[in-house]
Image (cartoon, rainbow, N blue to C red; front, side):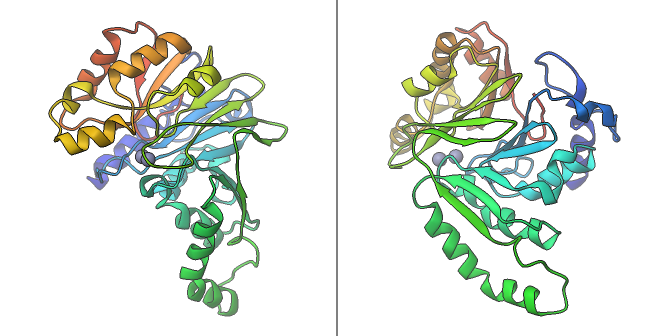
Length: 315
Ligand SMILES: [Zn+2]
Ligand SMILES: [Zn+2]
């Protein structure tokens, strides 16, 4: 499996430079540095996984990359190794020392088990500035407990023989409310509330840059707020589950999923309303169905451009 994943990484990471909305193969092991000078904004899927621990899908995470900077969304397990894979394919924005901004949709484990990774691993590998973490109420408490849990490690690194800087393990937490939550010379980030089971705070994000608008659903049932925010966007990255496989699920799980996630049939309706230039599926719950069947379920009632997202795809 490890060999297969490495092969997939080498193949898929070639996609950086093509135009249009196709999935881009970063195909050559050493991408042309000229490709990095473009300001064209990209969405890179770092992990498309769900709570089901599938070996070839990392936990939920993606990067919006613009002007050699990366803005991470969510931090599922395995996020840092995925960013290193992208960096080793020649994408400087994902250099471990540049992993400084993360936007967290909600605090479910499949979106945050990589949060300790993102706080500590880049620091160990040389990040010199605190991580800026944006997310729902509760993020500050989670951060505090993570740092307490690793207090011995941090102290040992700071006081022992391992070279370590004094700031890279720190976190500046920004607990957010809906609206504009972040802005710099590259990007404006807007948070909007979505409904996701019993979570009091769950968000989707819209990223606006000079050349593109990219909307990330987070985990959500069909959301009027998302439709409002995403209308006419360039790329809509949306979670989804298979409607046909859902019908075979036990009633208690059907109840949960119907109140927490979005089916293929529902997503087709959302896409008809939003009319994104490109729809990318992520966080796919297949339950024994196949990617082809999932795409077919959507295409039954949506004829726009839709792609089945996989780890390390670039759009
Ligand atoms: Zn999830
Ligand atoms: Zn969730």
